[in-house]
Image 1: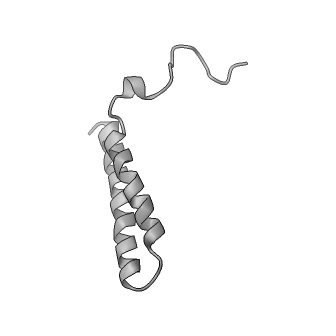
Image 2: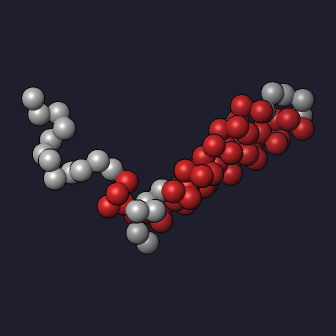
Length: 68
């Protein structure tokens, strides 16, 4: 299993866990909306993780970005 697949699955797991906790908290009368918002925000990130790794970051051929 490639690194990008593992990243997608992990982000998807965290998103679904947040959504599940949000639903359970809301059903029990607690404020679960913030967890739901985080879960929904992570879903597109799981889709985009590793989608096009060659263009996902800045140019890595220019050397160290911290070099002065």
